[in-house]
Image 1: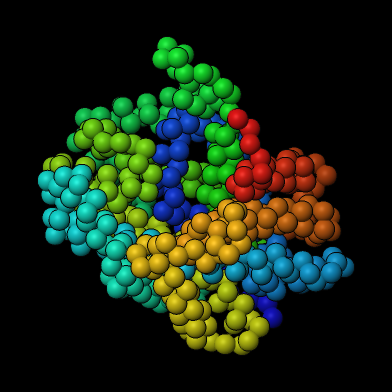
Image 2 (image 1 turned 180 degrees about the vertical axis):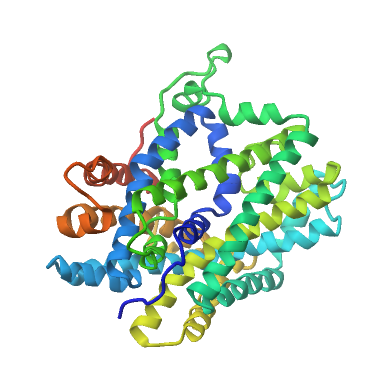
Length: 477
């Protein structure tokens, strides 16, 4: 059963796919990692990896989705049969759908934190707050499973509502409002940081100064007697971030590709999405770090940067209540648009394969994901010390609670392997005629042959390095 739904325009697909790629990680993870790994040097390596690893896999996912015009599971089965290969290749679709299912279960919990912080900001909870007070607000929230359940339920309800409406009435309407608003809020926050912080250029230098020594020789300071040892971990971090930031390997982009009209060019559209995704990450850095530096706070606070450090900064600044609230609304919008793409593939599969209505499929899947999310909620309080795989002995899984386990398995195993097999299938299993038909490849088409070379030789190696590094089997310094 092929999907009858289609995006109304190329622009709507770009908005939806960019919304899928832009998430919580763009707002804090990219700027923080870039600043700690050589700033501009890291950004240059990241962008190179986006074009050599991320974009080729995204193009492959879109191509497979549009060719199959079904959910990832059924699309992979159809194309495997078309290529006269064993239907076991549909396992790629299953892996992506399951990964998205697991990711949304804990992603919704974290997005719930951002929701919870909007009324806290609006009510002035953080006005003049101390670092200890901000930490206490966050710890009080995460220690209360019932409060986390409330916000997790609200976020999942918001996501289910949109997906139940379908592509045109749900996804398109939502992203056509949320994505322009997200960009507007981000630009407004950058302007606010530039005008009010007095430390805008310090943030620019932190993010963009090209320091290859910090990238290849982290922590090196000969004047203080620190030994300079070369490390490739910064480069591997850039490779991993380039892969994960585009939301590939989980079937989301493949599903959105199924709704893409045949007349839409895949190459230029994918490049536009990648540029928009990277632009959001860079703008987030320009919005966040000037405010952090203006208040003498630590820019390398990781997740705490959003939920502890930034609330302190907003609490000390003129207009902080308004712009702090706008910041957390921005976070919610970014998480919400990503959540759509995580729920859509499994809902589409149920509609295709079990002939369920969209509303019943969305509610049923959403409920199961909500239920699974309770395990992540309890990982921050009552079950924080419970390690479900402790019986396996001394290994990387034995010390992880449910939240850590879901995060590790999806991010470090399922998504890289999914991306690797997508690249192999698109480059080596699909027929030349099928690829050319979808990609518009001709003997003189340089963009097509560049993509084919990258997806065959460069991208699989890059994804494999990301996977081996993520699971601790590869160490370069």
